[in-house]
Image (cartoon, rainbow, N blue to C red; front, side):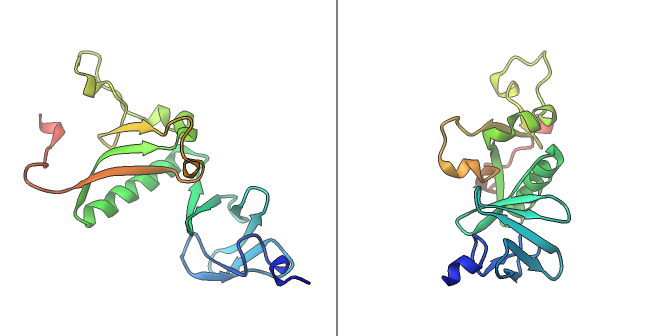
Length: 166
């Protein structure tokens, strides 16, 4: 018997999407077992990993797990965490680009300008005060898996602006 056929689609072990520890596959199943988070089942058809206790799912791109969100709070929280991480690394985000598949999910959470403002920069949707755009319809394949990207720049006195004081 071919050894590769004894393991789920992602191989004999993976990194747990929750705790980042290496976890083993259970042979002759589609399951990985994390001692801290329980069982994850791999779907070989769509190459998705599902956490059995919670139903949350992930897909992988370049050895990185990306949670596939079904509720707007999940993606908002993930974006907020990424913004915090950028800040601690000395960067600031200038724009958020969200995967098009989430447009309907997040649209009710995006802030819009007040009608009395005529300037175009105030008409675009915003999240956490940052302009939002969505990936193109015929985008690269990674947009089917990743959730968003952040455009960024380093903090400097010339780039520091406080839009709420303008």
